[in-house]
Image 1 (cartoon, rainbow, N blue to C red):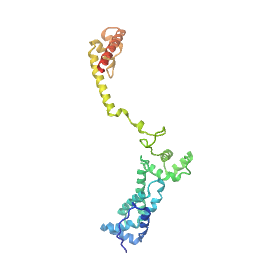
Image 2 (image 1 turned 90 degrees about the vertical axis):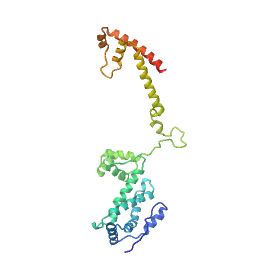
Image 3 (image 1 turned 45 degrees about the vertical axis):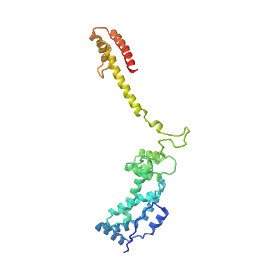
Image 4 (image 1 turned 120 degrees about the vertical axis):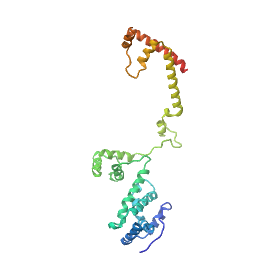
Length: 285
């Protein structure tokens, strides 16, 4: 059995050079694979783990080619797939009678899927299991580039075991695109779409907050001064009519309390309100 103590290559340089390199590593026989796996599992032999990894790097490249349609760099997909391969080697049990390649495919695809979902859009496009299934199958299942019809939606939903509404939602997400929060340089026409212009809450600006606090304080101080300027009866009427959070008194309630007509209470209230407005206006100024 031959041992190749070579470092694990990375896809950060020339991609074609990397692919040629991984193709040059020999494919292990089943007996060699089992022996290396046992050495790593039983003795922690890292050189044995390295042999398992480098002999399967070509598998990662082949799987990565199937995801080139998502517009992400193939080198990045390969690097993520290599992480999945390493995880598979760490968990591989040679005594189960299964070849490493069959076991590793799941881990390689899982890492690539996570990478695609993290980077295909700024906002994560799929979070649930059903959404992930739709994301990685819907584009290939669509008969054309046009929007899906009702029967097509139902057929895809049945095939993937999801609700038709979820198919429609994912189709909408796949058809969307990221929008720059701020206008791009040189965009001065009316079509420059800049969400920052209407997403900003001007009331949350520090200057506005301070202004609101000062206004509220002045109004509170002015109200207290205005109430203090009233006689006892007028103050009682204003407080009962306007300053209670609940059980506000009616004109007839106050008329019964003071032994006058409801019209007289209304006149006192009106005069008191005029006086208070004058005091508050002076305070605010």
